[in-house]
Length: 238
Image (cartoon, rainbow, N blue to C red; front, side, top):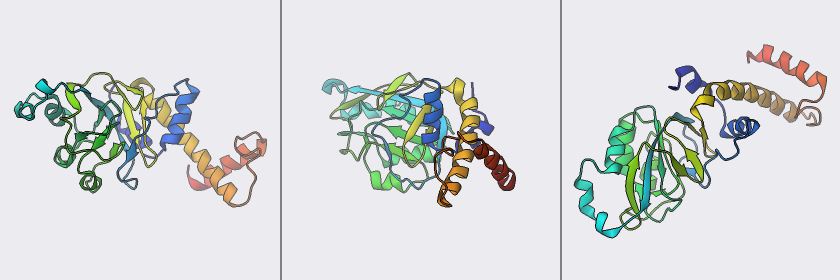
């Protein structure tokens, strides 16, 4: 099921923390990619459908420099095949010692309109990538090339990224905290629920800043909390 423009817009307004809470309510506890951080936390929220690339441990005789001359090389092909609006998600075996990609490849994704890139490994040229107009997430900066450790093996297949399962077409959301993966069939209902949760949390934050106790407020166990929230929503158009 394709990600609708309405759901994409809703997901841009909510946090990964809120989405993790909504997923947890549905029994999904392993959807936040571990040990992956934004190169530039100030970038807008990243939202898109997952397009995947998988690495495996490199076998030296099959992973020489000349393999990149092959136009069908999985890494190069993934860069050209990742759809505009999608997020490229890379399984680098949680190993940032060798680069998943570098500045030129990520620039190509940016120019092609890709929504972002995530790896549980690392990037070379990380300062350059941080300055590009595309959200990028990794473990930490990497050595110059992936040839020493990683071998690109497959694209657009189910992968694990930071111990999180990622299926092609899953919805990937990234903010200043990190990246969460939403099963595609849950995207619409989670987006709607997260917008509601965010409105309530914004109300709670304002009340706490005024000096109100969290007891009975968060969670809303006092009847007057919901009454006050309804009035706040009316005033604020939320």
